[in-house]
Image (cartoon, rainbow, N blue to C red):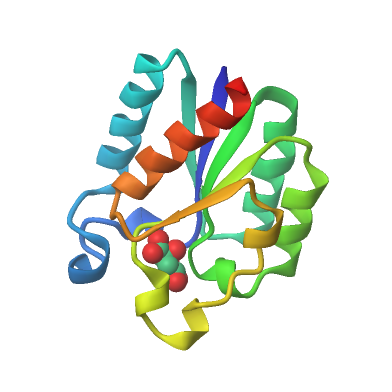
Length: 144
Ligand code: DQA
């Protein structure tokens, strides 16, 4: 089984970016933990991050050719991007939406998600562990 972990804009700054909101774990540390977690469940995990919408779309399209599913944190694009929603709809593999913070306990503009309706599931508010929970859930969906 092969899984893409896809991180959107500003998540490259994790560790130093608003640590009170997003925690002090860096993106490299999160990725290393997810690769290990994947191994323990016989899944090969590849991680990518981009600050650019088009590159995220390309990564989703490419994932269609090699991955069984995607764990996706689109960052701020979550609340605005119709094109990312369309990309998720266009690929025939399950995508799980994750957010480190509890977006519902934050500003109202973060309460809406363009992509939730086209995702297989969603995890919010558990810090970096949102990714781990999302990965477990995604593997469960793929195995079912
Ligand atoms: C985020 C939540 C978004 O509202 C924000 O724009 C981010 C990070 C999260 O993981 O909590 O960049 O997706």
